[in-house]
Length: 260
Image 1 (cartoon, rainbow, N blue to C red):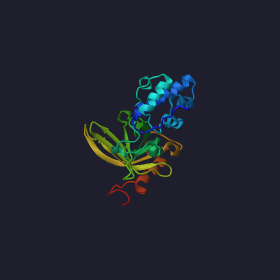
Image 2 (cartoon, helix red, strand yellow):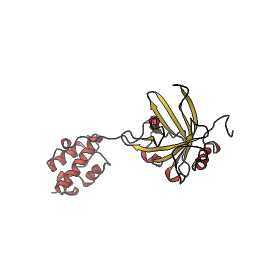
Image 3 (cartoon, rainbow, N blue to C red):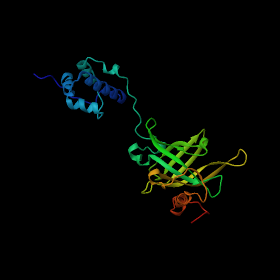
Image 4 (cartoon, rainbow, N blue to C red):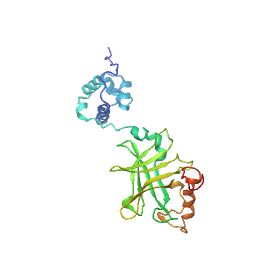
């Protein structure tokens, strides 16, 4: 008579982290013993379907299955492998509850352009990098290639469904800096407005708002320069054309300035 095969239910399922750790331990045991999954399923008197689904993460291991596997392998699976940390799979609600797959199109390096606060008529150019942070399950950004490196910003990318906009949020000891960007164009460009504080007279900081454009490196002009781009510089015409689109194409409105 063939051995009895256990039909699994969802009762007494192991916590997700422990279930994933047991799966890792089982795979390692199979590799060390050069044992097939079918042979293990037969020895543990469980169905091969149950074993395959648990090892692939499609369903958790139950306590009953784990005990049978321990008996078949002669190994304490729950002690052999500590629970694997289960990382969050979507961004916090405060930043839009998005998954990585939903925002992967935003990851990359961008040429970033805005008017210079210190020199009228000059464009300030630097790099913004957007990447997924697995530990916090959210997109983060950081600035690079800035002349004023100590003032380079970093923070979180918020992508709420309601507004259809993208927010680069910097928070430091209760102080905020915010870039509000429209959805990417067909070339992946992001246009919008930056609100921040600029150095005024003496030690004073003054609120300021200005157009900002982020252009993926693949779509950037061939000749790229960073820093302060003054009128007459080789990059100035192309950079100015890009930055002017914020107002001309209606990505942001500045009442009393430019087109109504």
